[in-house]
Image (cartoon, rainbow, N blue to C red; front, side):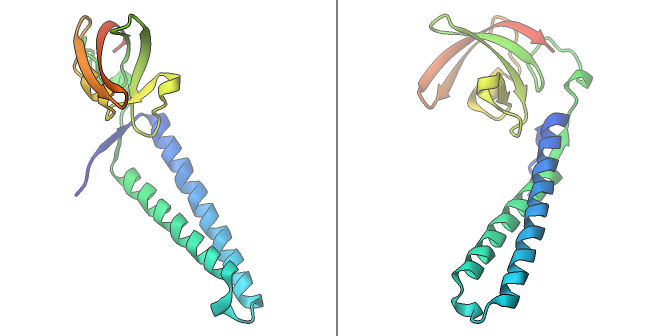
Length: 158
């Protein structure tokens, strides 16, 4: 089953770099494994060979996962989306919590999300609730620390 996932170009580039890094790692591990097998007398009892084989398996699985993710990714240029006045993928919005503390978040893909930098995934609990909101809307979000209420006080980019 193909589950489409959204990424901005930056998130897509991050995935490509991860894929390339894993491919390089696999080449290096295979070369090390080949060299080690050539110089090891008892291959069946070599912990080092088993460790490299395990590492090779883990890296190959990660590479397969990244390739699958890339095949399911739709790259979206937020500035090419229609202006609706509502929060959508790529929108930056300022919200206020029930304590009066404000924060600004941009709705991005999963790869780019970094709450500390104000980037939240459209699939996160807060991101999902913010999609479709307009200025003045209030939302309740279940977070790891409990239920919280937020108000959209400004839409900074649309």
